[in-house]
Length: 273
Image: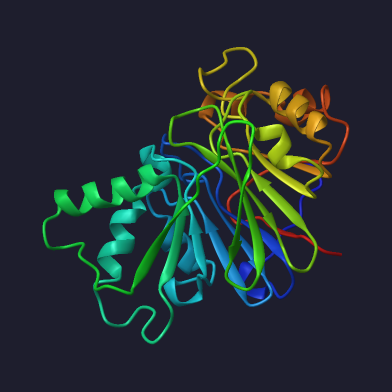
């Protein structure tokens, strides 16, 4: 790992990126499914909701009462199945009592998936009205979608080439830093424009350059995308076991000259000096 900062998410007081999971659908004791927190002032935004995401967020100091928004990149199981846990938890009176509904942002397919989970567990996931709200993001090819998150932070979404439900996100924080997330991705879509000039680009590099995985990036290809977007720092993540045997950072540096970090679970990166 290069240029890494470590620390406890509990101590975050300034804008920061917290890596809760840097892995994939393949279980590993050292890497959970890809999941992140962006902490900004009094706000905390959770990106992706795969198995165990809510538990890992709580362990990092961000229980349901501390979250201000959840952003889901697409409906593959390792990115959305904690929609089951979310709906089940919000049936209980304690979490978020007296707080505004917890907003979930994503492609319309995310809301459809949440409904299918409710149908799979009849009666058990029916959170009372007003406990959570769904916000559809609707980017069109070649045109980014713009919205606002709690606290006045700007959210931008763009189409990502991976799955029909795939969107990437750009968080433009009130304090100034810009963080972009690819979710699962390959070249195409509006990913480069979405990340244009971002201070930090969290980009998947799931497959090895020796043996690429269809629909995913490799370290060298990820570096080329980061270079095209002109980002400040590249954070590579979503590692399948095979790519971890490779010199990931060295390969990415062949195509990107800026700072590179290999994400690790529990890593905290301040977004302002």
